[in-house]
Image (spheres, rainbow, N blue to C red):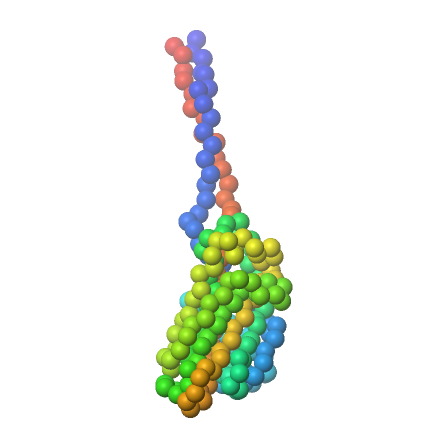
Length: 203
């Protein structure tokens, strides 16, 4: 009579290839000294900045620089702060990025510096970067959030993006333009597991 003996059990995790989540503007948290350059004229900033930076990530197939953007109206710092669509805690600290799309209206003239900063629940974090002397070419400016700063995020549903364009020094005044904001982080963990049973038949 043959008897089957279980030699071992093997468990392995079934997952998916790494992917990303994208949080896009869905409300105005605050703004100062900015005006609509092109858009739907409803007074809201966020719906001109929510196209995302790629197909399927926002309301369009990517930034629509020509038809939806906001402009600065004074020579001091002109900040905007956007509430974002919710993402789920990815439970990792890598792969966090904040992006904005900016330009100045005309080349030369006064220097414009563009700052981007990650906020949470209305408070600024240490995740920030200033891009100095931007030019008149629409450019995506991205800040890779350090792992230590990503670890400090306690509520992904309260993440916001703050941006500010500031004139520096002398020369003919210039206007700053911004057309898109985005926060990226890895997908939340998922998947399941399977069990394989290896047996041996005794003769």
